[in-house]
Amino acid sequence: MQALITTPQTPTGLRLDEVPDPTPGTDEVLVEIELFTVVADHFAHAATLPTGSVPGFDAVGTVVRGTGDGSGPAVGTRVATLLTGNAWAGLRAVPAGELATVPEEVDPGQAGVMLIPGVSALRAIRRLGALTGKRLLITGAAGAVGHFAIQLGRLAGAEVTASVRDLGARDRLRALGAIEVVTSLADLSAPPHDVIDTVGGPLLAEAFDLLAEGGVIQQVGAGSGQPTTFAPYQLIGRRRRIESFYAGDGFGPDLAYLLDLMATGRLMPLDGERADWHDIEAVAQRLNAADTPRRMVVATR
Image 1: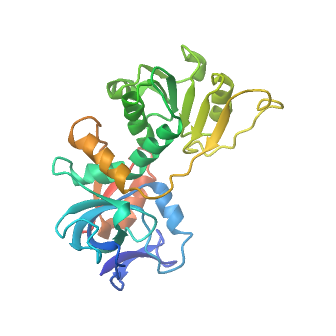
Image 2: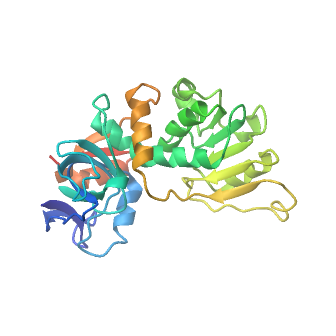
């Protein structure tokens, strides 16, 4: 099969080459990959892998061989897959617990764009516990995780505030369910009880200071690229906490839940620019451009 493999010989550190087909285990299905999604950080991750590795996390494709134990979807089923490695390839062996059927009502590219940010948002919100009637602050809300966290927070009963760098996305974020959109945490109308933080840096320390007693911050990302500095005693004597986020595994049921929300119109999808894997150098340049898209959908065929 063809795959994008790591190499020190190209600007992106990748080349399209022939590699052996994967051999599925008895609890795995073999998926012919139709498309995968890419963000700029994925290239940085690929650079850490040994030469000849196949990178990638999320991909959509069609089952071409079922599981040996009969536990997975049937041959011909379009599925969404999420696990670490071997996504940027023509074929992928996937444990049955790490995939979900893509409903006919869902565009496969929109399904692919949703996988990582959607699962991250869902699992972060679940870790916050009951949210009905509580104020939930989402930082970096104009990003992909924020796009889904606003909607899932609203579905969980929270009153969602979106924090963004500028108000250009205000109407979109309100349409997703945010009751308040701010560019400064000083403008919050009330303290948040919980926070999903995708920004980090000084904003994380500021959000902690504003957090209601008993509140929790789930730090899902650090898009600012800046360290967070806390003042002396800022973390002492307060009944509130910051939790690091770990997505875990066993994504199949959560993928199925999110895809069902999309299929029934309860979760608004997010589009990604489309490209071809033969143009991976151009994809890398596009993701590092000034007007970079959130994610790009890369077709393998």
